[in-house]
Image 1 (cartoon, rainbow, N blue to C red):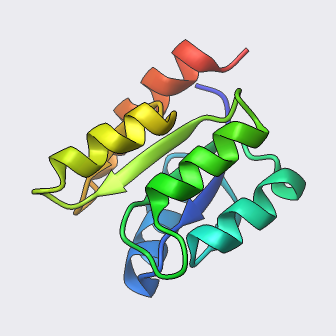
Image 2 (cartoon, rainbow, N blue to C red; image 1 turned 90 degrees about the vertical axis):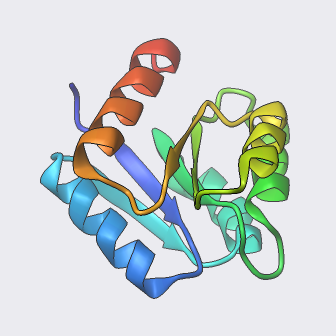
Length: 125
């Protein structure tokens, strides 16, 4: 699989550190980190990542609304929702907003690899 530029969006410093570590272990580049949905929407156009790993529950603007706004601006955006167990309805809302997949926390290396590969194969040129 080719090296991806991934934007990590999460308000938890611990989750960000873990995602960065896992993505780097898989050989990908962390193109940017955003700690709010609002920051993700603002930074997305200049970062132009191959993929976005988006948390759902964040201050200012949640991941569902951020996904919707990014998809409105770039219908080709590839967003993967990173969520906790028990948020099934929110995941469905995020998919309806345009997310291409999801992964459950705590994120495991193999599941992350599998999800990135599936989304890349289906949606990357």
